[in-house]
Length: 119
Image 1 (cartoon, rainbow, N blue to C red):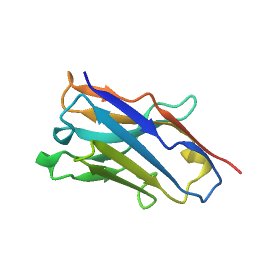
Image 2 (cartoon, rainbow, N blue to C red):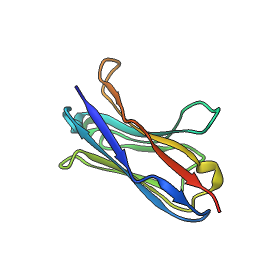
Image 3 (cartoon, rainbow, N blue to C red):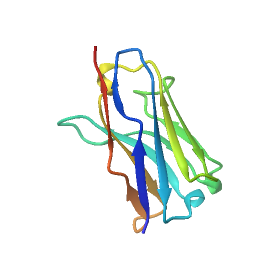
């Protein structure tokens, strides 16, 4: 059974930076597409960045709301995916979740880490 553990959330001022990390266990990490989602209070969960598996050549996509400010990367040797977040805005506030998906039966989520952007 796969498990994902996020870390790196916290409180940051507008314009600041944070790096989130997610470590996977119990899965063959390199064959999974991996993504970061976020959910603000009262809002649906939104995918902000995804990085493909080896078969997809690590293709990366960002939501329009974070493109140019966030950067996703993965290290298959360490079973980790990271999200570098720069120029943070108050609207980036939310709980950030790591997701690893192979198919509908192999779809794993972390417990989430809170990011708060406020002065």
